[in-house]
Length: 369
Image (tube, rainbow, N blue to C red):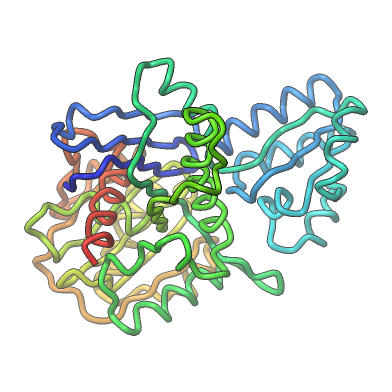
């Protein structure tokens, strides 16, 4: 691990897993938090507004959908108004026509204050509540000065004209065709592809760390005068793989059974060579076992996974039969009875922080460049 103090956040569908890596400290003793993800928190806020029959005013940066999308639909179905700025509304779907068709009314950013003043129930979007996190850390006596930051979130990619599930795997196929090194999937903030709008939004939020620090701890010094330290961002899959891999291992299969998504990734010689992804709620232990076996054998068509409601499968080459298989994720017990030669990974003794540990490891490699 490196000699910089890093804030790492792995954003999932159910939880956000937070790690503060501190130089010279055993990682087992690091400050770690497993808290509800922002989509769960926002969904709960929307349901409070529904109970109060209030008009929701949803504003802020684009974030992940999932739970908050379901809560939005419930609110509108109950007969209550739902207002959203364009950036916030993109959390629900890439196509704003689709969002408005569901009953959401779009407003401009300059109209938010007026809507709130008129009695609207304000809810801020975003995969990270940065001010809330820093306040919590401060109250716990934790230093909130960082040398860098890293964030992981699943980003399907922005495709207003088509399916983002199809786009996501088109991006994987394009990337895997050149056998990329694992660290290439961890982008500096200004390198994030334009179509990965959620990752760009999340990275921009973390860049606010130093603006907040500048205005809060150094009165009179504008945030723009501060040099912004590095922020890296990645998909949750590579982050989990990097976190689960032992230091001396570059050949492995990782199965990350998350609350909403299940991903199987293959790394050979430190390069990502295959990805299979489905929705956890559509799987059981026997089904997942069979899909993994077919995927590793090169016998699982991506179209079949897509037709089954998943995301897809892409494999760049044959997978050696002797690769170690690491299993992680909060729903990993789904593979408890498998006869596959799996190891249930718990880096530094904490399975839930696997992705965050991967982010720190990737940060070190990117900074070494």
